[in-house]
Length: 95
Image 1 (cartoon, helix red, strand yellow):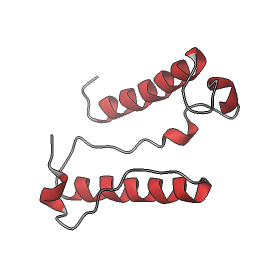
Image 2 (cartoon, one colour):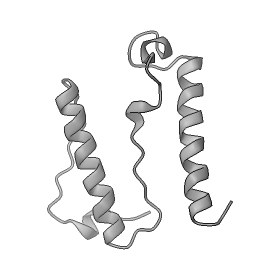
Image 3 (tube, helix red, strand yellow):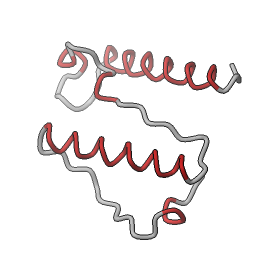
């Protein structure tokens, strides 16, 4: 496990608090930049997966309260993550 502070001593870690689409986009941008920075620093085992698309266009069907996934929600998350992992492993010729 990499120590993020080793690569960016000035990095401020804040809890993610979402107040709408703009905040989600800001968080996603920060996460992408962090992954890119860590990759540039030599971490070959870190990737960014945009989870905003995992539940699909009818995302409201995947949660009973807008936060916690139902069986359908977990299935779609697992399917999306499985696809990403397979793609990563194939690109690294591990699969």
